[in-house]
Image 1 (tube, rainbow, N blue to C red):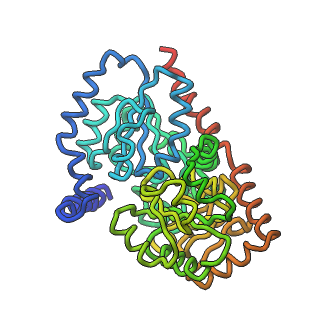
Image 2: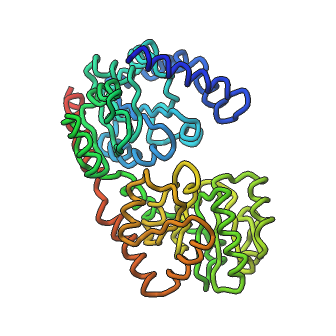
Image 3: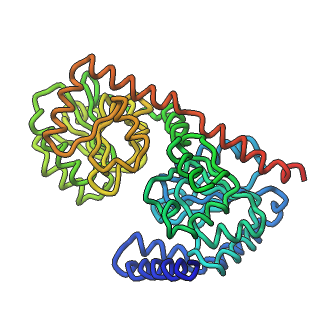
Amino acid sequence: MTTLYNLVTQIYFLLIRVAALFDEKSRLWVEGRKDYFAKLERDFKANQTNNNSPLVWMHCASLGEFEQGRTLLEALKNEIPRLRVLLTFFSPSGFEIQKNCKAADYVYYLPADSKKNARRFLEITRPDLAIFVKYEFWYHFLTRLKKREIPVVLVSAIFRKGQPFFRWHGGLHREMLAGFSQIFVQNEDSLKRLKSIGCENAILAGDTRIDRVLDIAAKAKRFPIVEVFCEGHNVLIGGSIWHKGAAILADFINLENGSNWKYILAPHDVSDANISRMEARLKVKTLRYSRANKNTAKAAKVLLIDNIGMLSSIYRYGKIAYIGGGFGKGIHNILEPVAWGLPVVFGPNYHKFAEARLLLESGGAFAVEDAKAFQTVFEQLEDSANYEEAASQAKTFVLENRGATSIVFKAVRVCLNQDLQD
């Protein structure tokens, strides 16, 4: 099975290199790993005076996973100021945004998973603890960590029927699970699935993202121009929307032109070309945030957010949120608006997301397949009693499910205790 794994991963990494000739994200993936070990060795040698301080290595696939691990990372740094942190990403979408992360001493890509790369990486960095977030399972890294007797924890993990761990051919994947000292899962279903295959190192902790979004909400920025735009109106916010969702919202907004609602649309793709497409589709007065002032904001019906970084704070101004991605691989972050008590609406591809399923069951969220379904949900939420119930269920969900970071932190602190005493 190891031979097959090596073959599959080599082909996968080769395909990324081929794609780099045409695709910007793949190009960044390849360029970010050039002269990798020379840079890594240079960085760690330059800081060898700190080598007596314990090193925690946190690995995240991308930006979303980093947000899940971030509260834990910051809690560790606050508790243990002399702690060093190595943060790695698999994807450019995480690395490019967080390469100057203040909570980390070193930020790198993860090298391609191979026996040689894993050995060299750990020989240079020598972490005292490794934290993987949610989905990351790399055989050679986990095997080498276990051989070096370095504790490894998996945070905010979620397991579903059909994954290789639970199938006849999943022996290698089950071996990877054994490489973790502890696996902190998000829900009971994940815990039961792991127990069913004899995995006894799993603990139910919950989703650390909930602690993160509540922290973001508590520290949210205010935007005077947005406040002027919203004043006296109900506001629907379209967050991280893609083409299908943007089309549904545009058709709806064009029909609702005379209502007391205003709309803030934050596309996932903030390129000028995409913003221009959205402007062309909308038949009402639109305004890009980058061009807005307090006078023009008052007159606009739709405010288009043409930057990255504002969205999580903007939810404070909303009454309902539509979250994009549900017509593709899966929905984007619905917990950020839910932290503000906003009922959320999304497309039909939500089944991989436990929080979406639970919110749908409680009535704090709604799934729609087209513009007609969205219109129906909107009309339902215009009824004050229906709205208050949905908003209450949304807020209750985050408040009842907070605290995962504290559970994981205590266990991680125990793993580091010996190193802190030395």
